[in-house]
Length: 405
Image 1 (cartoon, rainbow, N blue to C red):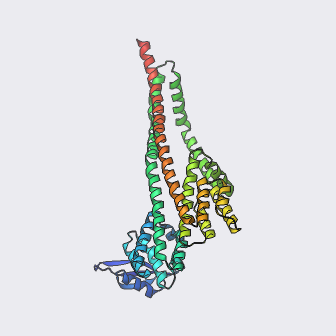
Image 2: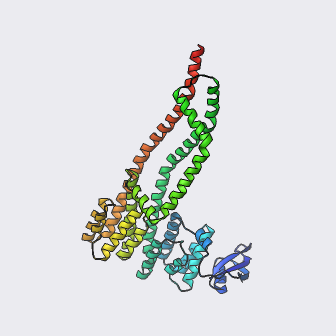
Image 3: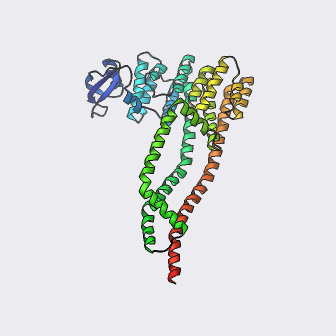
């Protein structure tokens, strides 16, 4: 690929200039003309020829789940209407609002115009598209059902986006409440309380225990707060580095899934993601072993990943899918049970999708219950702390007023 600088006019007669990636000067000129530009000069940048995107550009073109779902739905709709792939990609370029995404899909279109498949065009874009996405596109092209595969991909991505948005929306209020509450408490203890305690100390009387505790906490934060912050920051950095090691990630993930409520919820979310991905891949014609490798790679917990890797080895050696999943004992029993039913009935894909739907509903129930419990606990905790501060301030004042009386 090469990068060309162009000058000219757009369809409204306004001056336009910019850069475009293309395999040749003729391809760049054709692409700009199809976008409605009238080109006066077109020059290749020196040293700009390359086989794929630069590192910085590929990072800037990382697509979100929502964006990928929207463009996939549009592309599938155009293909179902009988629009050729080249023209469908051009329509996609024209309708995408973000310039970086428009350049990305224009690169894919250039690859298709050169005779490459859509899968090859996506592969040339580095990490802009997930492996799952590209693998399903490859299966769709090989089977001649690209439009149907893209529709299933759009459904899958929209389900993932909905689950993510519901989770973020549910956690937004507690997180905001915790941040605001923590900020208020730190302000009171660091700035307001020291002034009040200075006044109380000047009264020259014996202070009650709550007041002495409050003064000690305030003095500690004033004198050693920055040291505590540095120690916490260093601890976070060391923990993140430790977690990047194979042993550290395995240990931390093993500890996480053993937590009473958070661990169960993580297993439910991972089971839903694994089941839906595996079911979607199998329904699109991806072989079981490849589908297991892709689905397992989407899991964020290393313990669960190892369980899928062990399952893949067992299936490769001739075992059924349900048996090694049951032996792993890290996934909910429902997954192994429904998988066994699907293997016996020949409807494995449908059973896996049902497992995913069931786990998604369970996640929503668990999350709702957790939030309904978390919010009043946070209110009680912050109310208790503020009440303690008020009590510690008022007690010596009451004592002083009684002594004067």
